[in-house]
Length: 485
Image (cartoon, rainbow, N blue to C red; front, side, top):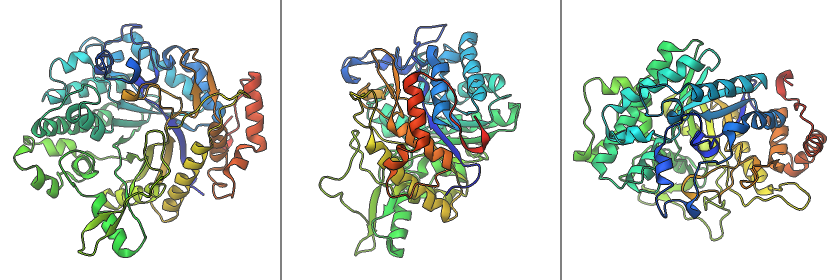
């Protein structure tokens, strides 16, 4: 179904799972600050403890091995490594990531490191944060510290996660840290500094990595797809997916074009006019660095068609459309057309760095977590990804979001995305039915996705054995593709 060597993984981010906010010299981040603002976070919850992964990471890696993950994407907490953002290195923080990487490798799980997943050190925010023209240099210094410590064992690097979201929700709408509502000109300046930071990070990784690196990034993907697959609608979806429709950042090209083509998109430049950021000599060359893959986070999409006047029209969702608990419509076609359009434009291999769904999961009376919606959702999306692969889109990997239920930013702990259920009161972990099902997907390299009943797969002999071992507390590894154990 998928290419030999296809990467099957799951992901997380530091602030969402680590906890240990006051342990071993970690400095505060902008999310620590926002979580203490009244009304900012659901139920006034924080990431102070989260999944307590900082102290329980070995057990979590054991669970990942039992699922059979071939790769685990995690982020490094900038303030754990450099408490003030620059300057003094916090050795216990680096030691944690040393141990995490070693534990993953011992479990035959390949680490994929994300350098920035939104937890900007508060000390750097106090000096201007992403509005400061100095932040690309600060990010380069941080990158150098991490690469110098981990690059003898880590080869897969992701610079920045979802700039559209942390700039759009953090500096435009005020819903995410740092909780600001700035002018369009200020937002665009922050976005330009993010792009420069990405470029500087790529340069540092290329210069200093001790093993040959594979470098990408992980923007969110706007995935418009043809509501009906006619040539006219396909072209309308392509144009819509690769356009800057309105002021803001919910698009692919404002960030993607500078990174992959070396210039801002013309339609966005016209739209923003006098609000355009100041571009210094050499800026675009710094941003435009060679990448090895284009990571993209896709959860949903929207159907479009060519209207009678030739313009692109959005097709309204039907009443009662299937949706996740985040109220994101279920749109499997986004995992075909999103990768296809992005590859056509940027000519890079595609890695799905996030895909998954929020679901109202709980531990049932039988001690299991039954999440058939997640199984059905993931199967439908993977079938579309397999279709893209069959149509020669170079899709090299898929990371389910998330490995563990976690702190879901402004939503606190009320949204559950994990393959592994976390009881946040007791920190007890329970593998969900979807984890057992995903284990079989990995084992077979997606061979049985098209079978009539994905739930039959979840009840197969391999998965039943894993479930029995989990209930009995057996810690043996689950056999996975390629002879790993």
